[in-house]
Length: 255
Picture 1 (spheres, rainbow, N blue to C red):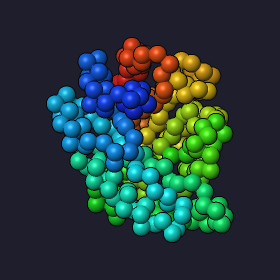
Picture 2: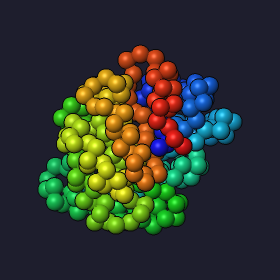
Picture 3: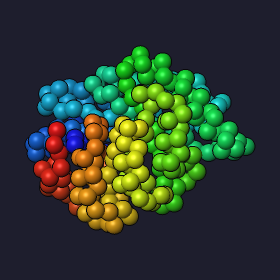
Picture 4: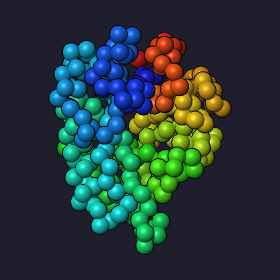
């Protein structure tokens, strides 16, 4: 199992390159972060290459795929992010698909999402990068209220319908636990359709050991599969996270 660390959630308000250096000092050399459009990518790339750090994934620049009138902007944002992924040496983008659109039914929004993802395939193939659509909870995080894709069940159904190896699911355990529960069985039963896994304590989205989930058991279950993607540690720490991250890496990173 390969573990990556989200430098934006774990090191809030910290310069990304400085966060990479902090992790590198502890031999934690796989990172991920959110949208690249507001960052100095040249500096991040130079730091990455200097330290020998891998970038597991970045997040697609936010543009709605569930709104058919926004299709061209959404495809352009995906293309822009795919180019950034190539520049940084990453093969994966996590993809927030958009919020519900007034005047459209869920069936119409789903149709737009599926069509948009299908139209994305030539871009993904050109840049050899995977996009992983992410279901998010709409019950706890107020800023996500109205987000269209709120269950892993629908995300997996969409990916199966598209049936292309470069369109998969980002399985964020925190969000799935809030919306659906049974996080381990859902994950294992659909592991072939997952390109990225993310972890945070639930509830609260803090340290993994704070909350109702036993991450030792969850991670051990992942290790029993042939999953070859990354498991991203993406929580908002209550205290300095570095030693906790070292322990997670020592216990569960198998390379």
